[in-house]
Length: 145
Image (cartoon, rainbow, N blue to C red; front, side, top):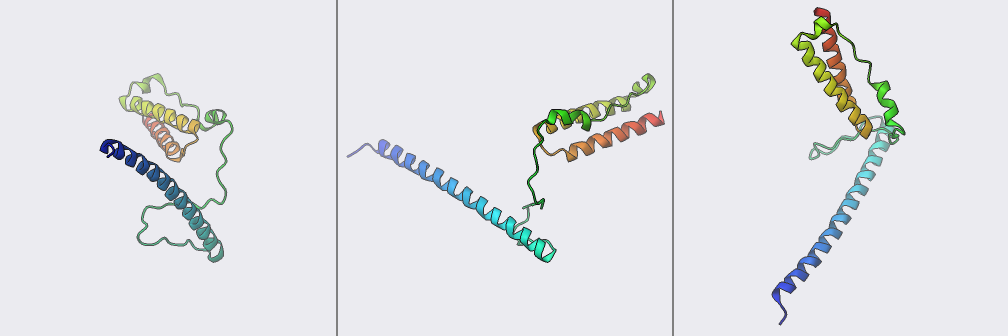
């Protein structure tokens, strides 16, 4: 009679290998099905002019029809200075206002986040919007002073 612990460890190892293979197979099949679904949706939209609605059970799947894959930027560091506008210098008297100082601090942090996201190549729309809002708030605050 063999050792039960050794048998258990052997069974566990075989189960782990089978689990890893099954996981890979399921992930591959999922990607294939999604790719096919996207192709069908694109064809439906191009043929009939409307977006194919998903089934009611699918509530969180989001797909943006773009046609082509986005092109990665070759030199994101070169694009950073062009995207970040030159900071507006406020008069020394206006900097004493705590509201303006807080807005400038928030703006600096938002620009830093934007530059980091641009360097990673991540989506920056929401960060650009935030920087724009803060610049506008700062401009309005300095005009009222």
